[in-house]
Length: 390
Image 1: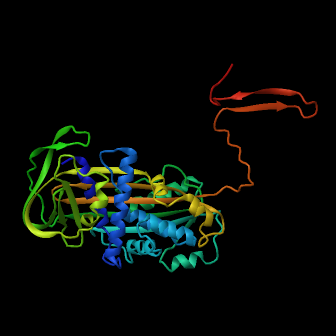
Image 2: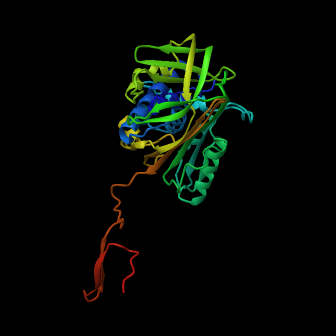
Image 3: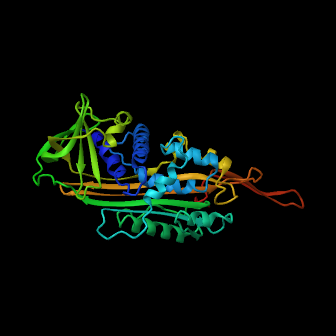
């Protein structure tokens, strides 16, 4: 089973994290599965990485929070990009699903959190704070160009992920606002895998083969689904609220990114039936992360669409989506699963077309002149400002 067969497990492990109060869970799961398949397929095509992990939940929450202030055009763009099609309120339901009324217990399997930070120089419209309060969101306001914002946002992410993701920003985000979604998951399997893990061959995506410890579970306590191309199991966690779908290919080629769209109903846990079966699954762990904005651009969530209409629910200033940073982690072993994810949606202020910007970030020319006589006192080209000359 190549590493690429784990893509479905990595996506499904996070798609299963929606709290029980998530409203229409079927519609939500359909949107989240479609989003996961699209993100993984496009990321795989772009990067060619052996392992890829995304968090549809934290992404939908962070973008759903941003969508509260977006124009009608922006709301449509975000809803379609997140897999909700024409259901413009879809991102709002994802945001609500990630909101937790009371702080969870320290040993709760799932914790989720959302937040928004406005730049202190951004002029908010009068109804912005009351509108957010209607969604139980109390924003922070601080200098997003200053180093303290990095410390505060990273501290929030670290707390929201129970320490699993300590850093999401490396520098001040700037711009108009940052919306955040984060989650932390830790649970034991309903039925633990065997303690002994025999070594078995594992085929990598490049065709090479390695030997890995393979977790083993046999019996009739799981649900399965199979056809001529794929076999899958829906592994239950203790408590019954969460599960992980693992899909393996019958051929040696493994599951590819393009297969995930056809496996959408599998990822949603549909048509699985209780049966006697046997499961071989490698232990695995992964830390992943990237700026998802280029992928989201291609999926229809574009800064241009947001910039045209802006975020009038927050401000009359012309700001647009700039970056969508996401970091994820997962660890799966015989006992259970630990996973965490955080997404930061970062905006930027759009440039006034009447404003001329001079950015000397490459070789530039200079001329020191005497305005009284017209003499050029010095002139030259600077290609390395740090190079000391004689």
